[in-house]
Image (cartoon, rainbow, N blue to C red; front, side, top):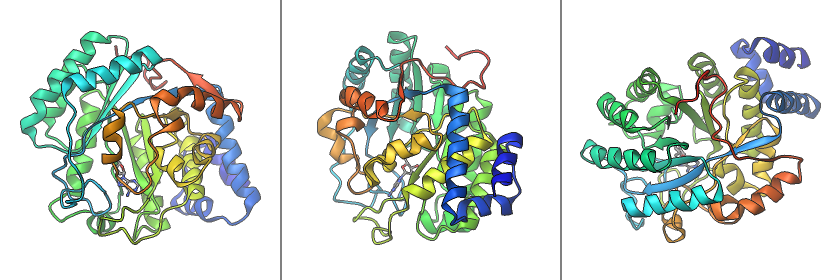
Length: 351
Ligand code: 5AD
């Protein structure tokens, strides 16, 4: 098993059966070796600095009905909100004064009729904070909309592919959503010059080790700049609300495999990791993750952006809690890196 880990570190690619062996090994020493190799490689790339992204949850209004997601259209128990431009800009202002240099606008998926409003907001952010990166995480849109937002000044886009297995995709999503279109969106985003992030939920209902292997093969081929992975956590008001949560351990193992496969990738230790287990976020970092995304949203809307039950959004998870976060990172010898944190694979930062 060690030889497989060493080869992954050296060649950045393995055969499908070898990924499976790494994901399923029950030998704790092999698992530790995998994780420690990934940690060491991450430190070689990024030192012990962790990049921050300020997350602004723009809206919980969504036209989609994904079967796992708490803000799905058919959940009538959600009180729906959309932040005003002023609220978003105030969040950025607060974030900038704390030291954030990346803002992530995340939200449910709207129709294209709101694209111009978002473009205006991006232009305003670009104008007011020219030294900051603007990341969008607003779902599937037309190529024209992605181009409009890119021209307005957006630099990065996060859109998890959720699964590369078509059959699993159709079990997790309503039939009107198309797996092919999601992959098409990712290709468009790359063509338009965004730094692109994609990824999956680990331990999603009906997911198998085989489908995770397919995801790894896809990610190694697609080479995203960023990889978003978190454990599935049930939301009680969804059709999949009775399925068990995924595991922090398997997610950390996947961080490690992907760190070794894509040494330059920006990999957040996600909120779902922190929500599922205390110390979950640190376990992600010790397995090769190098980004944390604290919540910059207004305090009174946070509880309404509940993608899953018991989602962490205060304390070290909040932008106001960065001091706590710094203390938590210090316990494992890490610190906050306050730079914009662009992908090292870009020769020129995209200002
Ligand atoms: N558990 C974990 N992650 C979830 N997401 C949505 N619902 C859940 C859930 N129940 C993730 C999806 C989506 C991202 C914004 O949040 O992967 O792409």
